[in-house]
Length: 516
Ligand code: FRU
Image 1 (cartoon, protein in one colour):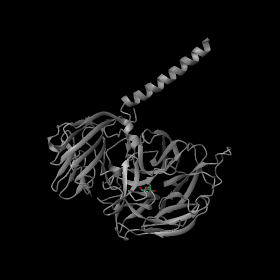
Image 2: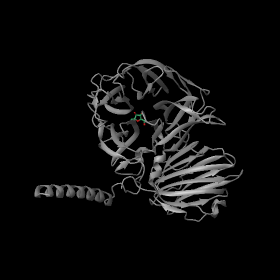
Image 3: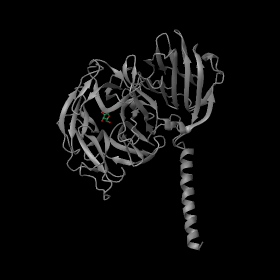
């Protein structure tokens, strides 16, 4: 090797070492290691975040855009923050994709792959690939107007150009937002579902090119009733119903409508409707007042799904907070987190067809240090006291339950505790965060949140994810979900089992951080 080459190699090695040192230093300085900092959930490095936006899979990458204030730790200057992932587990931060400009904030919306350049905005020079990414979002002028806009990216989402003909839909309204666009194969056109928030309605529009839109129909009010409630962040998709004869053949459409305030336990939450969408109109299978909830905890809002996932999975992410107290959450320099991506399905249950959700299987790649409860078939309260200790944990347990059984998983942190449990007498799965640590920052934070869960052949299954400041609980293979934030005195939680239900199996893992 000649001298210059050797010097070049040295320089490269030095640069690599510096990068590593920089990351290590950042971690040592508490970067992504603050006491409430989630270790396997997405959070921006700093500043305020709310809804997930523009979820789309394209050329090997999952894109997560999100409502973001680039200038501070509270809501304002809304723009689209951006991150990409190859596995939905590890995220790489990218610069702000769409920024507030000329007094127009970038509110929530979606993104699609325009595979055939229907918009005429794709600039590909490859005759075999005409595609580009198109984002569809609400342009918000404070106190004046909300209208629908589009922007295009011809470099895999790295840079974006707002369409000069914006807005593409403007009806002169102040509360008209959060467009979700899908490709409707049967009618071969784009369909947008967008909310008339104060009217508690969604509107459906159709378009051949993402630029000209025709009003098709409206749906709502329906489901949860509340005078002051707003409808926000809708989503629309078709899914096969599990376990039907001719598996996968019967499909239904799901219309998600996020509601603020309202929700099962107060504040903001998500409801959904099951029915049919014929390309123009959504027809509800259930009576108009049937209320179905996406998640029964207090911290799952603005849940929307990815577009264009190559393996056909329908994957949902929700914002792990609640408008009642989001701005008061005791974290800095970041505020709020996104949920774990969840794979959705539809299942025929005794009560009817229901949305089911399970954490993405990719999460298993983070599992480390397995704990298995050896003495199965014991009463839960006889299990060793400190079953597991850690700040990022996953647990899968199955119990046999009689009519008065209780099954409890207690997360103890110093003298505080978060109680996850099942009470067979009431048939409810719950998270009780009344004494979970810092609960005093808002009067609506402390509390117990529950959901009905029926045993199957006398058994219930729990799947629990704990990540420093969050708990997600899935009951009976995703038939119900509960998501709650917690702010315990120490990031490490001690797992204890309690109750008189017979624990048939339990496996637990510490999960590795995605940030180190
Ligand atoms: C929902 C929401 C949306 C809006 C965005 C603004 O959380 O209120 O309706 O687009 O947040 O940040």
